[in-house]
Image (cartoon, rainbow, N blue to C red):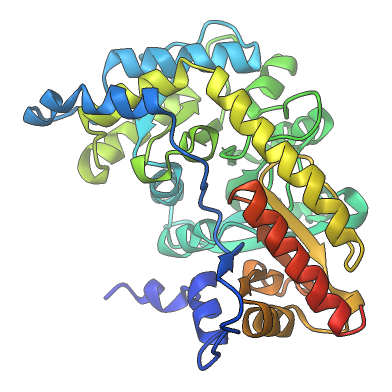
Length: 405
């Protein structure tokens, strides 16, 4: 077996299962889970219709590259959403079966494991796929901690030059999971300059980009590159690729539909890699994806539902814990030190006493540079309906008050 498999940590939800082992939740309460970031809003009917009306496509082998209509729909959405110049669907877009698989596979294609001491930079806390991808590619993850004083942004200036010299791949998550933090144009300019100086590839995970709470949408990596003058010339979007998905945007997590876009030279090599191991998107899913990428009204309605929940629930929770409305995304990243409980004990007792599931923040981070930036925090995914979310929030308030918070 590949010895790097031994380096993989248990997934956060497996740790949560072990934490809850032997616990019988209070039967007086129905279960409510805020633990998993799985959208619960209904899938729009027009997307379902587009899929079911395209079942004849199951009789054909799909291409790894994806059909031209789907690539054109994605390119058109990128142009509209980010205000970038004409985006070539033939060379700058690659449909994938969800961003999770693509993020993991991308490291295998990018990292040259023959180079000793190769590093993959990850935010901390982080989506655990980044770490696993680094290990299975034969590299080491290097974690850059997020800091509350920086609105949970990572301090990339703290990374020593000798570390950057060993980096082959940088994973960025903006809006961040679990913090909701969004990179600014200045942040992107710093990363572009570091990439030019040291030659590493930037992989920007933007799956939460369409759920935001302010008036303006979060800036994306392609948009930032265009603003920095990096979208044209003979090598557009040099060493930059973006990963996005319909799961959160369109409430279709089971459809497994996303894309990779950006540097055509990198995508050409990634396509070669995927022709050997990447699953091609089925024609019915492609048809449904085209319908989803071409419509914004359902996205606006979805975003309004999240805003309603966050605006109602955040003030309630602020009574008993330190929590703020995030820049974007559908998570609340709360500090529970006021309760006097560690994040793991908070989660275990809340489940036992009030049958509400949350995820300990320490499960989403690693000890790095002397701290675990997720410790003393919990992640709450506000993915259910308004009424269920309010019920969960009220139970959390009762729990915290019962222990003197």
